[in-house]
Length: 113
Image (cartoon, rainbow, N blue to C red):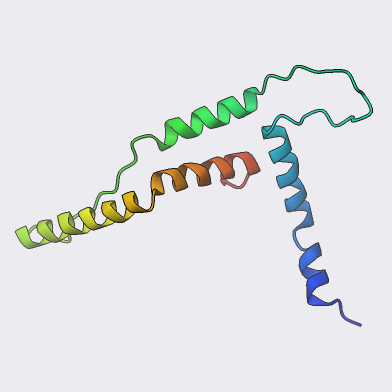
């Protein structure tokens, strides 16, 4: 009998999802996998610091620009109006933070390619 759809979905991309878990654990500072070893370890998470700093640098001062669709004054005015509208939506929805969070997720999980 053919596999049921839930079983197929559960097994799909298992390797990719395992890589996500591994990368996220490393970013969160959980590099030590031996749980039986009870010694305390001091971990400096340079990985997290570098990824967060690089993401902050790359995402800093991003702006939206709309180019006019021609050389006329009407085209320039329409482009300016569109830019204002897009920036208003951008600000109302806090898209700077969303872009930052998305970029950080891509960097951590390894899906930014």
